[in-house]
Image 1 (tube, rainbow, N blue to C red):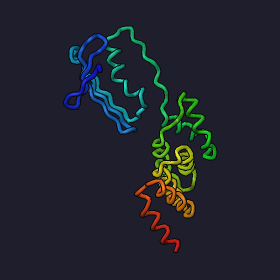
Image 2: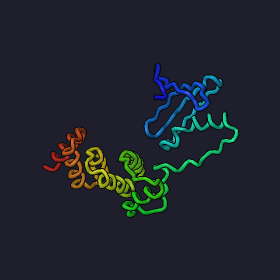
Image 3: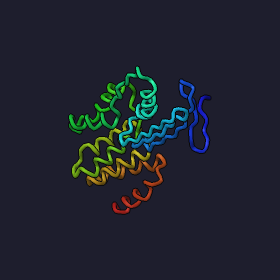
Image 4: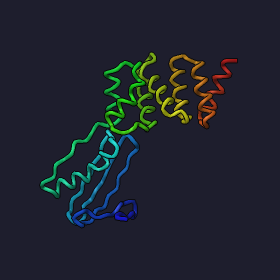
Length: 196
């Protein structure tokens, strides 16, 4: 009840009772924020290609606090899931993938629950790896963590296909179809035809 929305802009007031007009957006990887402090004639525009979740959503507002509070002390921004997963992969063999959720929970201090992150990183690795490695292990871990998501089973099936493990791919695509992944139907149909 402290913010209003007009023509795409969020309109609110600062703790100094000055008018703020803002708009932000993200696709889960990138984030942008435009904050205009109307009464102060100040605009903060913040864009990042390293979306850190809630910490990066408030950077423009924190910059505003720095401008208007001479005693401001910035808090450290913690590493995000993407950074932590990449660090883990650099320091561990793919056979340690099962330890990743505990590592993330310890570092993030919350239960890891975002299926999209492992899928994105898995596809990134899939493009780079000629042999089974982190890509396959991330997809396997993802379906273990989120077994009711048909899209994740589809992704695992795609990885198995890349690594010429057709029988396992068929099982994954079958599971994806059972869970309602419409895009998996044609792939499964074609794989089964090849088996005939």
